[in-house]
Length: 367
Image (cartoon, rainbow, N blue to C red; front, top):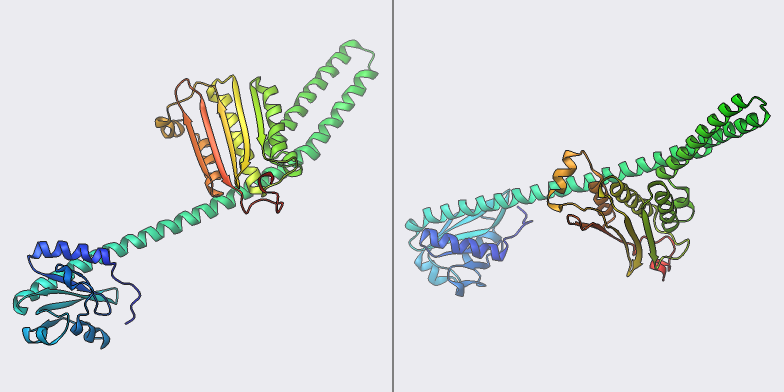
């Protein structure tokens, strides 16, 4: 029988103290080598229980009694009964109750059962905790894979919209313009021009959708340029003033793609929430890289909300936007914080470590 787990000293002493009080007897616990690691008599702690040591070395994991004569003969031994603490095919040591062996025996057996029950409970909790950790790791892995697939699909659709749909609509637009120029009938010319305007609006919508799905600037120039362009388009579309400041990020500086796309999506989601719910007039966006940490701050002057009812609100409105932003951040080992108060606006702070995530070696945080 191999020993793979051992008594925790603090746990053993707590057990001894409680059991001794319950039983009204002196109690001690030896570890798997016969060393007394816990005792109601603190002077005995650290002594070798020689009889227990002999039993353990011989692999005799069974109850034994100690007579008064043996107590005088062996070091660290008191008369009484010692019962092995066995759990899951492991002998953790012995628990002993001192006194007349006939009287001490039932107490020692009861104490051993109590210790075994506690060890069983601890082991169950540890297995449950490990299962939960495995579940969290698997969930993170699956979520990360799902996001990656989603981004790849968005990228593909965006390029199709840009390269195929946009080109087709542009060709139709040019054809309608040429047709309108060649027509002499003013009524027909007016109808063609109206159709041209409709196609022009459709082309603008396709461009907007393509950028929302996957901005080309993000792949070509990086996060700073992509956010700046998105904010420029956002201001024109919704007539909301947005200021954008970037600190310690050089032009063209890059981070790993998963960091760039996650930060970009968080900006998208946050600004989309603001236009839907906040009734804000001004928004401030700040992207800073300092001390190997990428920080994104988004602040609006909108009506705000009560953070205590945020989860209830998301469930009622089938909204997972904020949860999605938090998930993206945590997958990158970062932190996500949102603070708000009624009529005082909302502030989002995202921090993502970039120590090992800069594409350009020696160019982390603009250094």
